Image (cartoon, rainbow, N blue to C red; front, side, top):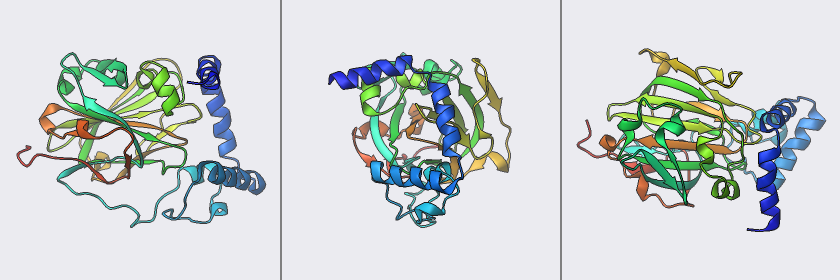
Length: 287
């Protein structure tokens, strides 16, 4: 670890993450052509962003930088693995995957945090004991929409206030329990195989987390916000359906209980994944 990296970590404790992210968020919505085109071209050059799969391939065809960063893909750009698989919810890279211990702990690269600290409540800790998880990191060059890993129905959404540390490899390796410390949106789903949870983790410069049913989820204040959903077509999703998006690089944590039997823990850290790619097969005997 270099001194420069140490300084970057120290600065993240000192910087006003939410204020900085809101300021950048406003700039990202600027529609002045000279400004937004400059920002888009700089991002393409800096992060080596490839627009070949994008629905709009012309960098200057976006109304503002945020529209570019949360760009849609062409309809045939990704192939779904199918109903026998738990698929990747996003394009990105596997940061870590593993088992959830008998005391409800997730361990990742020498750090650990509990299920209840991640979810913001203890209601479902026992549900996920003995289960599995995978953490997918979306870098700034990646496609930034999040999709369903399997068919399911939304039952609950929780917004957990927190810090906005960066979630790149340097930061996540150095700041203990960063995923359970950052602001995040926790999504609980019910499926024919059992329940699962996806956690959309905010980060430095992520001006907002957005879902397809609630829009931008950034309630003011420091308390946890909790929404419950009843059955209905509005909250039922098929594998591959878009459910949310980030406005900068961030992280998705997918967590399944033991009863689903999907071996997410076999995934190797550093593996690049695409949305819809099979991560773990569902057992044929699942009910």
